[in-house]
Length: 397
Image 1: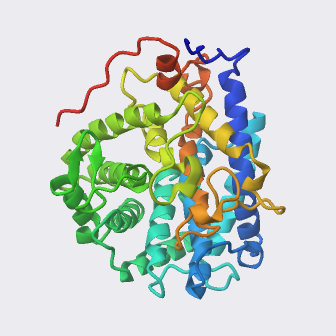
Image 2: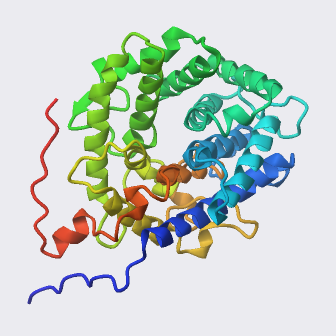
């Protein structure tokens, strides 16, 4: 018996409608974090949901929420305010973010965040925060007062007391130093370049995939951390003429290939494989695909508008459950709702704000093809409906 093809979407949404949905979703995610941080009430009001009983985990969870959200929302904020409805919403969150980040690094604030070595975790989220600042140099870094900038530099440097593991953690140290290089002109050159060299020389496995350290892990860390941070560090190194930055050309090809694979991970129904650790970061699993979209380096076979449609399907699917948020609007730990036992012990309420990194493409203006292009079916949807999508081939490098 023949299987009927998947039904074509009736009256598919426009790019403008998709963008409005993305903005609405990102604002819903961001609002409790930035509103409370701007009002000195983040530590007072943010819940701590975790399988861990480590009291230090709660202490570092606040920087997790702030760093990860900032990393994901930064490209959208960097578009700046304008007279459109979206531009005015963006202005609100630029202001909240700047006030909040000022408080986060103010030793006199109740929301002064932990960047030092009482726990190893602050290195991770100092790096995500640093990456966010690199992605919004005008609207975030540039709008901080001189005193707040000085405090931010002090706190980023404080994370140097944490030694990274021989894994994706090396890129956390590199990213912090890249931000310090960009904003102060100085950095710890060894911490900046060591991780880049390890991934370049020792840990590449082929076809766009790196090991997480020497071993290969079947999870989404190539997307959560490795490709985006390696790319952003190399971009900064190239800007400042640092030796080894010529690797950027190779890395961009690898990122583009990995992004092509990620687009193929998205099923016709807008789902993707539930595999590997940290799966409760939801659509943050597509950080690398989002980065490639933002940078306009998608392969020719992957139209930006088809990525928009595929990612919209994913975000709608994951966010349709009301159990994604608690009554006060904070994200719950889960994959497609409230699913605490799908998480590892290191994960908590703050951790899951990494999902925002799947929405980097909001940093592209509405006029970009990603948003302005028509509804376009993605690879899996076409293939399962009998459309010839051509052969997939490995990257030869």
